[in-house]
Amino acid sequence: MFAPFRTNPLLWGLSLALVLFASLFSRPDIPIDETRYLSVAWEAWRGGDWLVMHMNGQPYHHKPPLLFWLIGLGWSVLGVNDWWPRAISAISSFACVLLTAQIARRLWPERQQVPAAAGWLLLSGAYWLLFSTSVMFDVLLTVFTLLALLGLLDVRQHGGWRGWLWCGLAFGFGVLAKGPFVLLFVVPVAVLGPWWGGERTRGKAWWRGLIAAGALGGAIALLWVVPAAILGGEEFRNAILWRQVAGRVTGELAHRQPAWFYILAAFVLFLPLALSRQAWLAGIWQARKTTDSGTRFLISWMLPAFVALSLSGGKQLHYILPLWPAMALMLAAGWEQIETRGHRALVLLPLIVAGVGAALLVFPLWVGNYWFAAYAGPSWTWGGGALVGLAILLVIASWRHADRLPAILATFSMAVTAVLLLAVVRPFSPTFDMTPMATRLRQLEQQGTELVHVSAYNDQYHFYGQLERPLTQIGREELDAWFVQHPESRAMVYLKNPAEVAKLDADFSQPYLSGAVALIDARSAKLWSAVKK
Image (cartoon, rainbow, N blue to C red; front, side):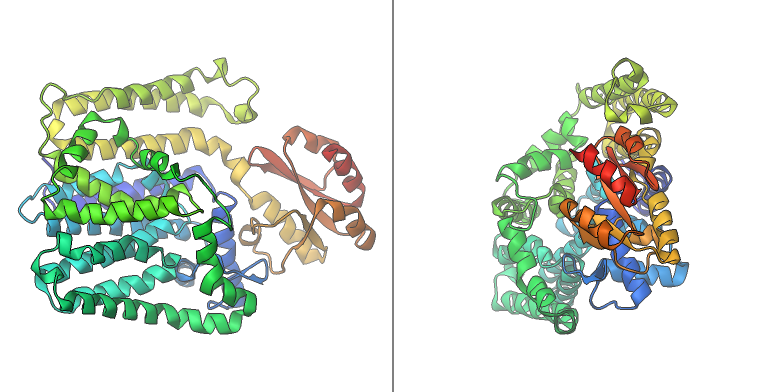
């Protein structure tokens, strides 16, 4: 069914490396999240304060420090660069694949094909691959989630304290990776241990071990929390100790979505497997085996966390990424049990991908006056042809090698991801790349020109410009008064329509997402006010 297991880790690592290279070559770091996290790391690097992170000179309490520490560690060895932060997620993704396969071996030790299938199916998720090459926290969080769960399985199998030690370490570093989210994915599994785990999960030793692991995790987290709370000031202290967690649970901070949001999100997380009949059959078949301890373990992992996240106010699609390995394991366990005769070739998935490819091939016929029309070009044509070719290859491969379908689907997903990045996303790079504006800001900063950002500043420019001073932030209504007091300064303003830049006689401008950002002086400010009206 698959290559020998010792070969699969090499193939997984090479596959992720290729996707990472495609991402690095095709796109810059995307505002506002990735550029913000890079700039927070840059401010820590420049200022030397790795205990209390800063954004635009102010204490940054929205995320714990582990990712920033890892970025700084890499920069200390490799120099300051923009590829290492994304490589952290790729390395984390590789670790997740290995850990998922290890969990499969613990859940079904007699079924030799499941670990390899689980690893390949994990890599088939297009959304997972996207975050495996991004400067984000969720894949790193998943590493510690899997380590903690593996610790629980070790306790069930061998007893003793080794598994609880791993679990406690994972709790602590998971909190440092993305706050207490790691507990949401692990604690329900531990509490439901008597349901899925057998004799060793039903005694007092199990509960003593869980409490000890929680205490160890808390102690690790407090090694950062306590000094950071003391040094960060009252607002920072209130945020990291209460407001960040409470605000995300209630949705007060941001990202408020309806309760059914994660049902749609799960479907997106499931792509492209959601378009495979075999995947649905495999998942349903295994989910119905509720007498199987492995199935119970996965249900304990997925269901409580999914319900809790759905009931919370703040929601984002990537919050459920730590559930994707559980879904991959469920599918892998059921895959070898389904009957595929008579349904050997995939149909819906290649048809949809071929349709996207055909649309790219004939893009001049439909792109019209959409804002992205200026970025569509020859690469869309060859990308469309490549997608059609990949769709045909998928049909042939799924027909001739149905026993290797998980590996085929993962290879197909990674190939499609690479093509879309290189052919479709790469032409959009000017709309994401903050380097030109950041470079100009650096020049002005060195000249002593005062700079002001009109509207909230999300640290888009500090890393790429390696700026050393915070940017002043003001509202639009304050701009005229600002220039009266600072006539030689420059202001950054944003326009929804890129064509409006020509009306400003700006000092500097560049595309920004679907609009533009311009650097204006006092004279241009009056023109900008007229444009905004």
